[in-house]
Image (tube, rainbow, N blue to C red; front, side):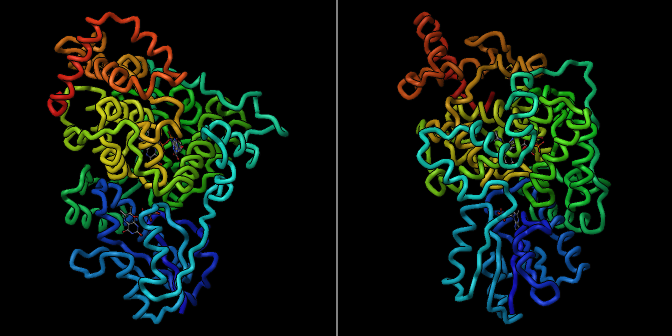
Length: 512
Ligand code: FAD
Ligand code: DLZ
Ligand code: SF4
């Protein structure tokens, strides 16, 4: 008999595995597994979302006439890995041929590629067609280029999909409207209120299971709540998409980089979980945004800014991941060795920007891009945290995190650990960037205006500490030349004071 294994992030009817199998005849296998839930300590909400999404999907398939074998998580079960399940099911149902769509993590794909020989079964691995750019096309684009810049890749994807194109020209005359997308949020701007989706019987069972079995994992999961915010069915994901298009997209562009203590989500889509689990397709989401612009409901900078994140950044990081793995994960350009500061796990810090971003992370398994990049990421970069430690953290704490998307963003974009392959310069910034884009500094224990006093913003001294300690690696980068000119203009006394305060901050990093 033939069986198809469907992974937790493959919950779409457009999955190649389902296209290949025969409904009613072949077997569909899904499994909630100890190894997948614990290879990093995933946030409780992430596990609940995956397990509930999987159970809902399995039940929809059954209703549609598919034969499904579903392995529910059970701490006492001897089946802890995919291999265990494959062996058991192969024996129980006499399966001699397995189908699986390639997965999103190099770690697991290596195991899958090994199953045929390790388990002595026939395994057919299908290409994942749920992306706009396949691995081969990306490799063709990347090969021979000295620098892989997202902007050029993005233009290719615009031409390929025809999104926001007028004949062969970009709609509105520009490819990129980022310059209009850097506003901070005024106090009088209304922020849309988010609602979750009602907890049904399946959700309630899963939430109980996760609470009982993954109590030592980070994050909050409310057992009594009537709603759980992340969509776990396609229908809910479509509702979330409509909410975003109707209530958030118009302001998404201009406030894309803004941060506020008033609300964690602002005008962001919250669609990454649904896209990454296969509940929505990237093209349908982008077409919805394009349509809103065509109808005149949203400005071009909003539609373009949003579409660029998906057909640009999302496709680009996925291409980069498969093009450069497994060596990519080992890069450590600055030779960082620092452990992750304690606040990344306990949220306990007087730095308000960090406290707000971490609270949001634990409460919602979410932080928006600028909180990830310019607050928690920037701090890890300036402090010199070892890349693998911070990568594992991002992979664990966000509900949308999968290695293919998390790793390039963290290792390349945030930590510059690939030496500039992904970003032409490190996204290092002092407190003044955070002050410009948020209201955090107004409510902070530290003063963002000073750098070397006892109550000075830690980001300020750490920023110059970072610039000084990596002089040999960064000075020749043309995009860093102005920063090094400013450093050269500083008096020796000022540089010494910055170094001293930076050293102090690093020595007391767990008590800031
Ligand atoms: P929105 O702000 O509404 O953006 C719309 C969509 O664009 C997102 O849903 C996402 O699919 C896509 N997108 C936006 N930026 C990126 C990007 N840089 N790379 C890839 N896709 C992007 N995104 C993940 O999906 N999974 C991750 O594990 C992940 N890890 C990240 C780690 C770091 C250190 C950083 C800086 C970014 C990471 N991102 C990751 C990208 C981005 O932060 C999230 O996609 C976004 O915050 C998700 O929230 P949203 O759906 O509200 O996105
Ligand atoms: C992230 C995750 C978790 C927490 N649990 C499961 C699981 O129990 N079963 C499963 O099939 N997938 C799970 N996943 C997703 C996988 O670990 C992996 O990240 C993706 O399948 C990679 O494409
Ligand atoms: Fe963050 Fe510094 Fe602003 Fe405090 S003063 S919120 S630590 S940037």
